[in-house]
Image (cartoon, rainbow, N blue to C red; front, side):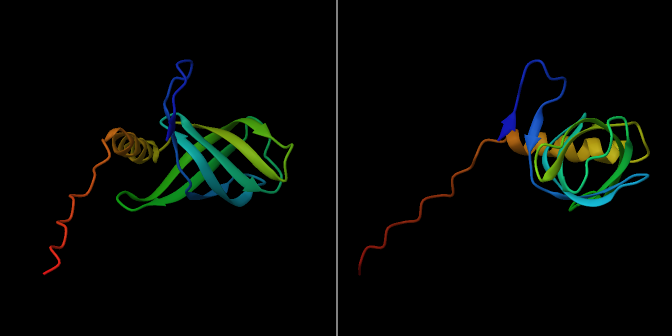
Length: 125
């Protein structure tokens, strides 16, 4: 399911994918909750980095392979045991591959669900 708020610049696609987040004082495994062409929402163990912190976010995509994109912390929520982070994608060498992955997620979300063909009923003979 996707989240679409007309006030948002980019449509969010719900996903749960493991990512590796690395910055100056941060190296943690995290899990995405949603992704868009503008960035992603992740949940990580440990302390949340400060707003404005630049991070390298890495994950594996089955079609693109290793994705490595620079992101910036634009919001954080520390009120829970896990760190919840809003990350904005920053122009970097991995941006084109990241955008292709998100575009594919958007296309897959928009495809109508297909129902498998009905199986013929056994005639009991």
